[in-house]
Length: 83
Image 1 (tube, rainbow, N blue to C red):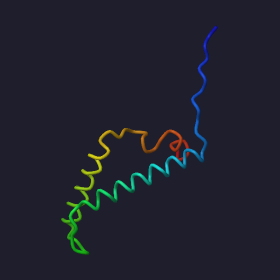
Image 2 (image 1 turned 135 degrees about the horizontal axis):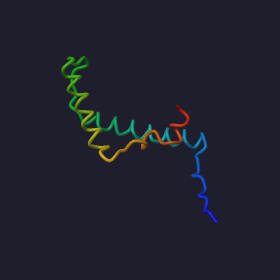
Image 3 (image 1 turned 30 degrees about the vertical axis):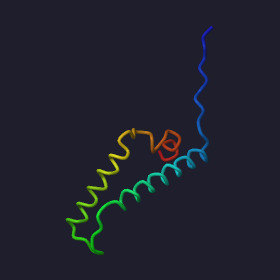
């Protein structure tokens, strides 16, 4: 007899979308928290200030998500919907 492995459970579209939306909300909250920790500049910062700020934010996000791996954000369930 040959053992047949059961197929992995595939989340429904609603589950995949709901989980994705939750991950987006988490990411937005992280982004806003980290962005608020950066120095503020005048209403219209210079291009150099904006560039420096955006690079600093990128480094903070990379540090906060250092353990992130492909598929964490766009899980297989949501990948199937957006392909």
